[in-house]
Amino acid sequence: MLHLFRPLKERLLYPIGGRLAGTHPNTITFWSLIPGLLAGVAWAIGGWGFLVAASLLTILNGLLDLLDGHLARRHNKMSPLGDFLDCVVDRYTDVAILTGIAFSPYADALLAHLAIVAVLLVSFLGSQSQASGGGRVESGVLGRAERHVLLILIPFVQIGTEALGVPRWWHFTPVEWLLIVLATLGHLTALFRIREGYLMLKKLPPQEKPHHD
Figure (tube, rainbow, N blue to C red):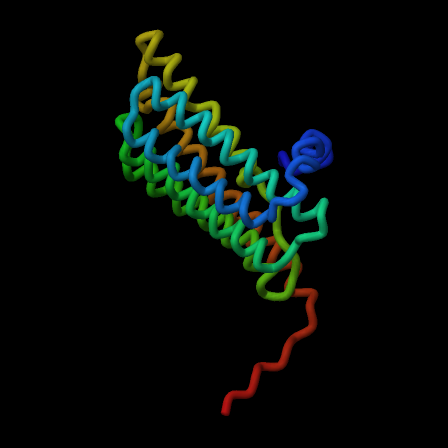
């Protein structure tokens, strides 16, 4: 849903994009991986200070992820390789953060595993329709932008509940509730994308199978 704010995002990034005109977007993509991995490490260590660090590192990862696409579009450097690298780095970041949460003192590893499966399915189905000859599918209620916002906010919710002496709500920590949301809405989003991809590809003419010697 947050992709609807894309025009606003482009305007906000315009001054930074001008200063980085000589920087290749793929370079920014590689740099975005570092805060994503470190956010996972911060989650695994735990503690209020590292929770704040995880949130800030997730913000930095998100900003760099937005910036590489902005630079590519603005300076006509969009390419299949850039899109591929961006997807690879995004998946490593998603898994690193959720794996860090799985090893943290705030969540059950099984819930984190279910969330990872849902997140990877959503991302896979978003691009698989395009790989099959259709277009990229972005429907559903929980895309990467929405997940990023939730992962930025949840450390402060966890800190707040612990400060109030209520670390669990109905047997689950706030972080575990987030994992439940990611798993549930993630699989729901996957179903939306399966349907959209099916309807899109169904309209395409059949292709001949390649001949093998």
